[in-house]
Amino acid sequence: MRIVMVGFGVVGRALAERFIADQNYLASNFGLKPRVVAVADTSGALVNERGVDLKKALDAKRRLGSLAKGMPDEVKPLSSSELLDELDYDVLVETTPTNIVDGEPGLTHVKKALSMGKSVVTTNKGPLAIALPALLELAERNGALLRFSGTVGGGTPILDFGRMCLSGDRVVKVEGILNGTTNYILTRMYKGGLSFEEALKEAQDAGYAERDPTMDVEGYDTACKLVIIANYVMGLKVTLRDVRIKGIRDVTYDVLKRLGESGKTIKLLGVIDGEGLVVEPREVSLTDPLCVWGTLNAVTFHTEHLGSETIVGKGAGGIETAIAVIRDLIAVKRFLMRGLGG
Ligand code: HSE
Image (cartoon, rainbow, N blue to C red):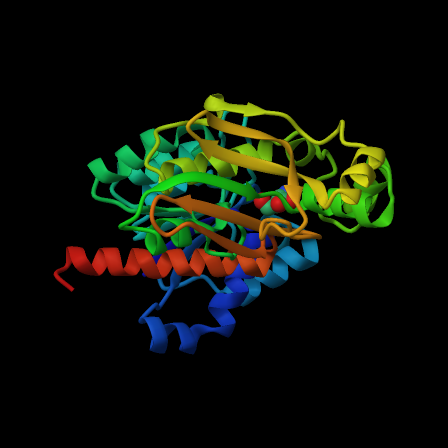
């Protein structure tokens, strides 16, 4: 499988490491033989039809912070869009950072690949939150597959759990803790007696929250993930504009303490039900399976016949998200094989 990797940050590098370490395992268990024909970061691209030397690329990035600085003689000053125009490949792995204002640069990359009939695996929530219904249509029209397991729940297979395990039934409501940073903050406030500001600082120092934590604490990250679940699991054609969003800045230790005395706490929930899509702090019983702590994510799918099913797991992390990308690449491989009558 010829792969173009656009984005070589935490997730891209973790993926390259898995490709190297698990080469034999992936080939013998899943028939997945990734050949990375290009790796691009913002400084330029390494291109090799026979396969980029990932060990050298990782080393260069680790030592000097960019491909161009680490391998100046080998990196081509190509933009990612030029790369996608010029190269022959089977799948684009897009791991550039999320931008919810206009989805760029990921949106252009994803659209370009899909419109050329190339399948795409992405961990970038921006393009999906802004344009998932249109992107799914574009993929279908061009005979390509668009996969994005790593956008929700890191490596925890929340999307496939919702769609595959519950198929045959009807999902009528979804409730989830979809952001590890805010769950960490609320946990430290509830269990450690910290103020919001103290807990946020701790989350930043531990590397959970972004330096600009607006995406997390104001609920936008949860809203992006909710949009993706709504489209993928429930077949709704919605975007970020359809979500009512409120973050956790107003939650206080006093309120949490009082609720705790009656067996409840507050979690930042993303909810999809008959009322639409909402992100807001809501009361949750301490005995509810959704009531997980620390940086964990949890999603409950309420269905018409099976009742309620909850999936819990780590919602972020380089290796975890890289595993989700590999899961998606295996799905793309099967998809491409079907096209060949396999
Ligand atoms: N900032 C996100 C979180 C990372 O805290 O869950 C994963 O999307």
